[in-house]
Length: 156
Image (cartoon, rainbow, N blue to C red; front, side, top):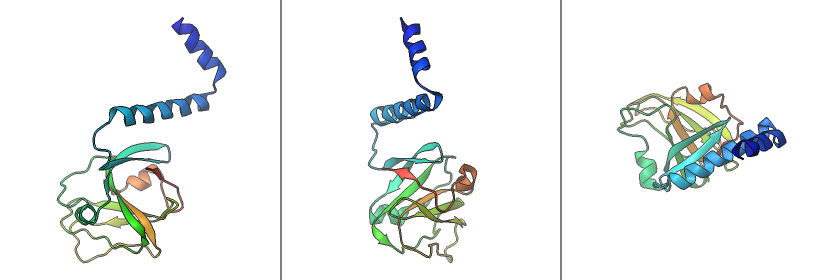
């Protein structure tokens, strides 16, 4: 019986439809089974890659950011949420790892990506336009994933 169901599924649904089903199933499983503090983490989907990132939603969380971290896993990062679009400044005080930062507008489109050097307290990082979100990842992550200005990110 099980084989007949599988054969019918494979017969009636194209590869792309099956891929969509698989992605939806994975997201549902992660949401259901990852019941740990999603208030401090969120899923982010970009260019076919689904990752779980930390979030900084309060002034205190945004102020601390990724400071005092000695290491950041390959697909880990931090997504900063602001209450309204504006010009916010980032710096690398007490941040020991090299990061790239993507500034994201209210439509969740990347408007700029900049490289940030560790422990550089002199340089300030900000784009030339207002933004609502910022995503910090390991240096090279955006390039490795093919993410550039104008690309749309999906997160909730």
